[in-house]
Length: 428
Image 1 (tube, rainbow, N blue to C red):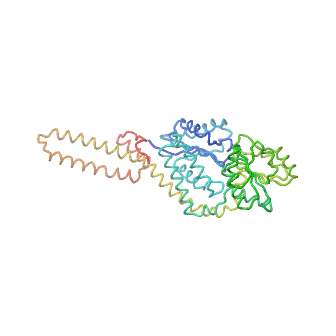
Image 2 (spheres, rainbow, N blue to C red):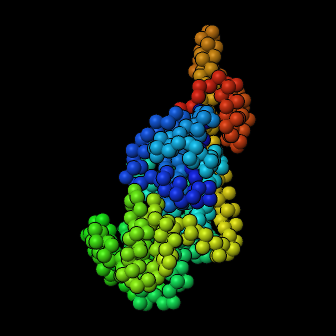
Image 3 (cartoon, helix red, strand yellow):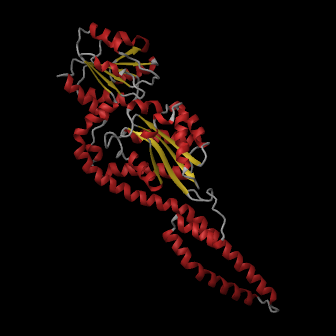
């Protein structure tokens, strides 16, 4: 019963932010979505990775047909009430070793918009923890994700990719320097309390920004976060009043629709006497209407814009990424041998048990035909037949242990008439 990995999804390279935000899963949606994913035919284990830059369904399949990938595409459409024609062309499918490699590269931030950014690893850990809590993951995905986390740690420890990388948050903070000559007299407003916006605020704080306001739907949370930055908490319902004080606005609030549109910004600009504003949209779905970009004296960047801006430092990061890719390749080989070993061990056990049962039955028949059944005769025949069996099995068992790929395992099971292995026989 061969087990395999399958990943169906899209990311910042294959799909624009507008489509990614329509397919994104909120944290509160994951448990229910995972339950429905487990019901997809052919899916034995599952997890969902959903961030600003990617939406991916990760599945472990058992004796799965090629149609499972199509079933997962339909699942994504059902979950987000989208017709396949609206996103199918943007999807990618990774199977087998390619899926393992993709998962490891994502965790190691080699597939990120900004190579080396650290946020993706924390997001993956949180979302895999939800899959584990929901009971949708099992031995294979447990091993795959935890190996991916270990690979990410190796990459950060053994290469300079983390030190050379420029995160989306730092890119956003650096962009403020292209708009404002100095930050000491500038005020920042954080809308929402997403991790990315907090990172931007920290980067701006180290660059000497004057003051920070925080507006979240839960005022106590705004008070807590504002205290951390020595800033001012703002009631969410009075957002519009305080916007006129903000030179830099960072949005990362969870919202089904735009929080701020061009009409609001026009009013704010009039109150500010057309002083420039810089809007950084870190949210998916987006907080700021893209139409705002048409206004004078307003500079709006969303996640895709930030990713494009970070490309200036790609050369140095990519040199470190070459070393990281070699680490990933070696780890994929190790994991794949483990996965194939899941089928080898039950096959070796089943083969030994079957041959031993035959030996024992024939030994008893032979002993029953002997008039003299002295203990020494039984011991002699038992040792003789056991030695013969071990010599016969030595070559096939050694081959299975050394080269136990799925095709060889299947051939041995077919040749010796063994039952399919039970996937619960062995964990990690």
